[in-house]
Image (tube, rainbow, N blue to C red; front, side):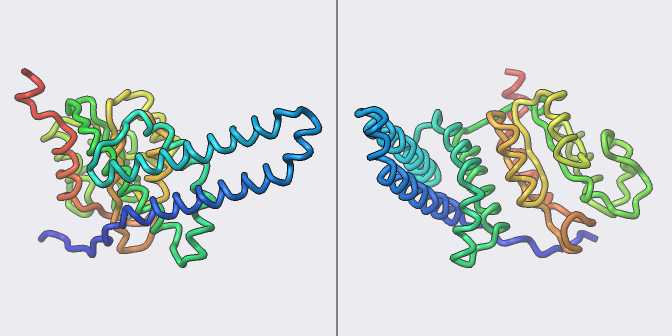
Length: 263
């Protein structure tokens, strides 16, 4: 009998973008305050120094807002600049810890903010129209997807799975055989990054919680990655599950059909 689980609600992409924009504005205000206080002292060191430092701060703030605007355009499905994606991820790396504190003021949890980032990142991934052969796609899952009482070791070799149906690993192994992608079960982020390095895929699909997906997507960049949130009916990191229909739908968007690949 097919297992039924309560699927997590879809995170709102505008939540992450809004908090990132607000954080950028606050950071720009702080930079302006620093410049305003220091401008007289800078002028004593060298007359053009206040202008140089002010211009640098303005460039940082303007570049950050341009990256956010570019993200909004992509999310809306309008014309955007793909080459600014690297700058966007770098901006996220710098400002996300601050955005978490800003979000708390408005009653937004870090988990919701991370989920919104994943939804936004996935949309950007799909907007780029990335397609790869099945054998150049790596699917990585956490070991908590395996039934905790299972005696079979599937990390490093998921083919050890006996496909008893007690967890979703067997379904993923079967799907990997059907579609032809690489499948790996990792015990942590370090091992997952090692697998990415050794496999050298052209794209990654990762299944994990919000925190691990966010850090993983940023860690492997510029390698394109799409994330699928796991389902945690027993709490985090224990007997988790995944919506296999969503996994298949994402894979079908990424993998080049065999008839086109051969052609």
